[in-house]
Image 1 (cartoon, rainbow, N blue to C red):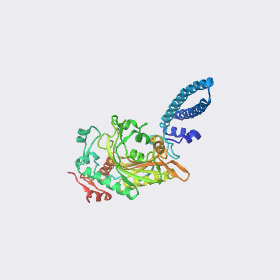
Image 2: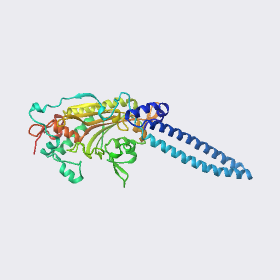
Image 3: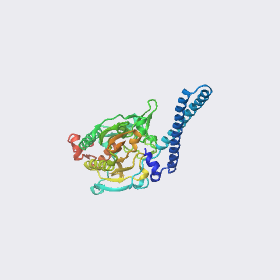
Image 4: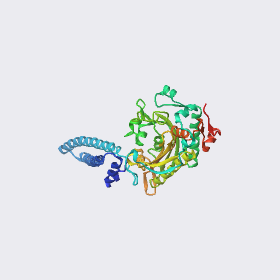
Length: 421
């Protein structure tokens, strides 16, 4: 959540951020009023408590009628203190509830607008000219079926729509991508992790996924646990309620991810582009807030290096303010070229969440000027299904075979091509 000091000292900054996000500016005024009520409630409670303590000392010294009068007042005070405490708790709950609705403060320089207003920062690689090569590209599902790598029919039979089974070389591709991603991340200094895919409400809420994103989250009511949509949740909560002695902390996790894909009915229904479950390798950093923007550039560089190693053409987008998640102050996406759609589609993203998540999760560190919240950042290294799509479509050959990029060959048993079965 945002820093209350910023709210009190510079509410216009938060108003500008809310406006850039396309969210309620009036919420800031509600929050200021709630903060004032909360603070005045604390003052009222403390004054009554002080009077109550003073009255207790007077009663001990008083006698006769005076003592009776003081005892009567003591009884009244007890009720007033109880009421003031309840009012204070209610005011605090109201303030906290409103605070959780305010998105992270958008950083300067983030382009304004919505989903279609992201700014292309660079284009890396050149899409193949299949027409010049003399054939029309097949889509990933047709290729996957020819290779016996993707089985949508049985995935639907097992689990329903938007589920799939990776078979044969499809499963081998995911394992190869996992090993390549984990090896590269280890070279970059990340500690490999395999965290739980089920988390408590505190972890999900602390990372900002129970507000506007709650509709996309799977919940198990009987256990009050949530299936994560990204291992960012577990990696952020890993240090919740801790004071760290050293920074940065770099983690990379492999985990399943579950998403309802609410609001996406009818979109990308063919194949494995938009599904309810997929596996992902995610990078996560806990660092000094002063270093957060530098780390954001590093995470983006790692994502770019991985896509370049797979020989996939892509673009880097500076995501517009209205398309940022609740916790992100800035986000860069990588969009890979999808030949059969003749456009770039999102495959990775990296977000600078500044100290927003750390405040919600109670993560602090010891600095020279004292103990204070840290910054958190996340970055997708490999969302398996989408990268498999890009590999199949971009490296396909006229006979339906698929070339294996050189970087991936050691993890595919040395194979340089996948052949139709």
